[in-house]
Length: 180
Length: 280
Image 1 (cartoon, rainbow over the protein chains, first blue to last red):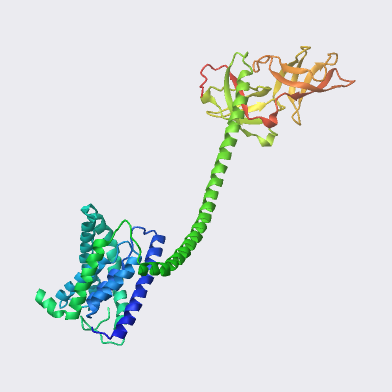
Image 2 (cartoon, each protein chain N blue to C red):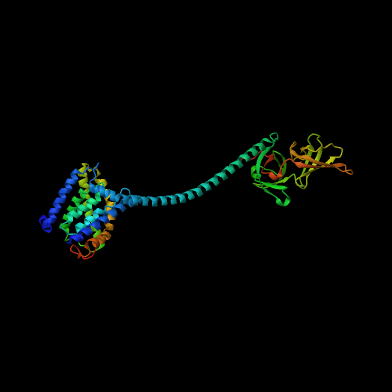
């Protein structure tokens, strides 16, 4: 999907605002519900959407922008997520012919698969950075509940983000014409 | 495969990707997870979004407090009910213990009384009154199984109650001295004057067959004479309440008030000659 600069800027701003809203809700309401060890990584779903659905020259920059906003709400920083986001977008390019967003279930499975890749890479880089691989297991264990919640939410998010990004543009360059 | 991927990537996208990755690696290399200096962008964003987070946290805190208070009130109410029930149970228990203590004291006195009597003592509890006969017959929870025999005398620490009138395996009926059918051979303690005590109305006894010439005073103690082979000698029966000397009669009409308070009778001691008394 190739978009005009005007649309890109507008869509990117709306997406970042959505991310801010989600991050605020996630950082306030989840602890309120008692989930103090978990935080839904909304940046991941946005980056995955961008990687999977947006074929634009500025994709690395959109990923960077998303990660910069995410870094305000997280100690994780922006760099790791950006590197992984770009790697994932490479992987999507390799497997793009296999991915058909024909149903919500496919979307959930696809997002879950790429999340696994994401978190494996993320855990590896973080452990490498800290020079301590003993926390690798803990990071992975913490990741699973979050990733499942995020995958289940992905059809809704993909629908919403499609409306933001693809409004006024044709849909379906990658995958089917369904907006999942 | 890499060639295919790179072919799909436009030159600007590839350049963008490389630049961003290099930048990211630089950022990663310089990032300190223990301490971080905020950039201007981060400072602005923090100042901008933190009040929102703070507001949300305040809202959720208020909501949490509201629900916490609500549940606290509900819990307190439940706890209050539980504690009230518990308190009632303990009050009841205390009452029962007080009753047991009183009973214990009474029974101790009861057993101490009549220590000089050479008969076996069986403690019995009053379980019923013959209401049709103005409490002149009472039922106790001891019978043949506990060694009670017919015509065994029944006493309390205050004095004579009556004798066993009817006995079954585990229960016995006692004919009290208040009953007109129960006659007790008695004597005035200080003058040793003999007479026959008979039950009358209003929980009083009448001492009969005392000669007119005998000097009887109000308040004189009346005890059993030990004749008739039912009551042992020397058991208190009552005190002289009133004396009436009629001009035409040879005897005096003496009213005796029983020493036993029949209105408050709870336990009695049955004296029996039976050696096979079952102690419980």
